[in-house]
Length: 456
Ligand SMILES: Cc1cc2nc3c(=O)[nH]c(=O)nc-3n(C[C@H](O)[C@H](O)[C@H](O)COP(=O)(O)OP(=O)(O)OC[C@H]3O[C@@H](n4cnc5c(N)ncnc54)[C@H](O)[C@@H]3O)c2cc1C
Image (cartoon, rainbow, N blue to C red):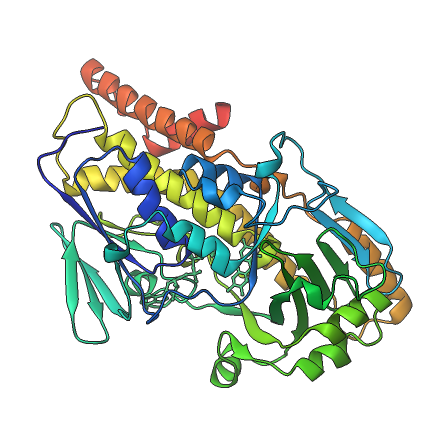
């Protein structure tokens, strides 16, 4: 543990999965003894919306590294009996067309796990002091100077600190302060989600798969899975051709949907999906938004973004929760690398904070950009709706069989990635010092480090 006389006051906007995980990671991993972490959440109560969330092995391993062991238990999350994380069936025939398997996940607790979001959130909350979370604090804007950061709230109050982390989700106000022209794009689909007691469907739907299952149709998909604590989830989707502006006027996030519409939509699908949609008791609506990658996550030396605020990829590949957890660990490692050295009292200066944020940025931004590029490619190459049925079937089977490989993301080792970045930074520093000593031309810093990173 690095002993500092001064205190580092960290403000976190948003107490969702990214915000809570960041508070835990900084406290447990950064090695900084004198930390004051405060979270500001717009919601008046800490209730997560009633939807499911899947964490892949990278996210599960990171939960363990953060000491959130309680989230690894079979009671909270559901892991299917087959150990196959993603099973894809045909919408009409109900035949399995393709699967994703775990590649290197020997510990069953690290396998892809499905939670009710409220249960995962509650598991994280157990590790954050309640008095550090300020509810009903909706951020209106954020600012930073060379010396401090500030968060301003719509209730007219403000708070100040040394570091600001925007964990305020896909419509982040912290991001808006630095990228005022950043615009989300509507991905064209609205998801209809529900979570309910598994007894509503188990034993009542003939041939109900015991594993979590995706069914893919020509235009839309359906997903069903058991969750922890005896819960079950169904997720349907429909296309909506409206523009972002029109949509935002008529559909708000998490608004009640029409469950009759869900039943009608899936009435001609195979009997399992038809029965599941008929037994789904309600639906709530979630438009799918995506955004472009950001040019940097190091903002004004003392500010950064994490989770959906940093990479607005929508619900693609059910990756957001795991990415947010890995972000939090990488950020804490960045601080540890800078401040937790045998020399105590490394000052919390703007340049040292910037160095920590830069290590985080370089560990995570490029990685999440790869996902964003897949998401944007898919959006830009959607199959036209007017396609003939026989062609549609061929396109569907091809899409099912040629899904992008996601192992690079779902089994990503963020600690290893961080170590490579940190080593490349040290190499760049050493090289530039050597060059200065030799009186030669300086090497190109970042580009040289990237070169080394590729070699490693
Ligand atoms: C319905 C749904 C289903 C999803 N399914 C999956 C899935 O299966 N697998 C998966 O990995 N990911 C899924 N995701 C995405 C995943 O939940 C997120 O990527 C992940 O939780 C990281 O989110 P976050 O903490 O960055 O943002 P969020 O979860 O959006 O949390 C942001 C927090 O900031 C607060 N906030 C927002 N604006 C302000 C403001 N102005 N001031 C103060 N506080 C503010 C919000 O109230 C919220 O608590 C899903 C998301 C949703 C909503």
